[in-house]
Image (cartoon, rainbow, N blue to C red):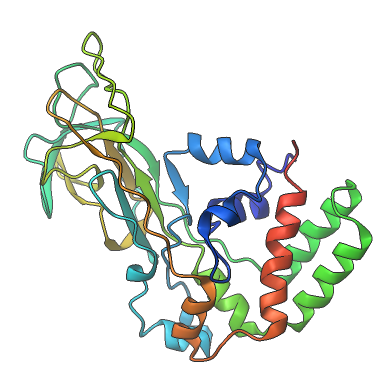
Length: 303
């Protein structure tokens, strides 16, 4: 299995938010160029916005109890006119139809109705299916150790680094792993574009600008079947989207406007998020493991 398809690596690459408070760009530069290119190609990147989910928390205590009373989306919300962040509800599932294209002439804030259509030039409100919401995976100590052993067997991680990883993992609390898993759910759909997609009407945004939908028109939507139509809602800042819900990105059209590209808001460092949920600072061992994890992930990305 290549690192790009290793579930542990993919999960970590997708959520590369600053583990401790530091410059986000500096953290991202530590990943090699191939991994960065992979992330740029993905319109939907799970966890980069790192919004949270609460799955099976009834069996957990400590951090999970605090998290269940905590509004987490503001910590990681990247929603603006060109992107939409959301959190996931693992307790609910949608397994209904998910057409490739929905036509939504009345798309706007809140909810709106759509019909099945086809992608064609001139469709101002054609939403293209990107993905179904995935359940939040749970990263366990056993999974981390198995992944590390595989990386070490491939010669990607030296013995000294692997021993330090195992030692620091053994020293972290269950609270740490609970919050770590909470920080891996949900995601962000990115819909802004530098080049118009309309055949025969190509437009290129000036440097530093991007095309976005007109004000009030969602760049992304979550949709479910409702009789002969589909009921959709603006995905931006959506909470508790059921697993399996299809997510749609708006196809660019002639009425899209060029605006200065907004820098992604930097999510709060994981240490600050941990403090807010658990009510204490991360221990030295937890800080060391967080750094170990990013260091080891970087080593396992093949050039």
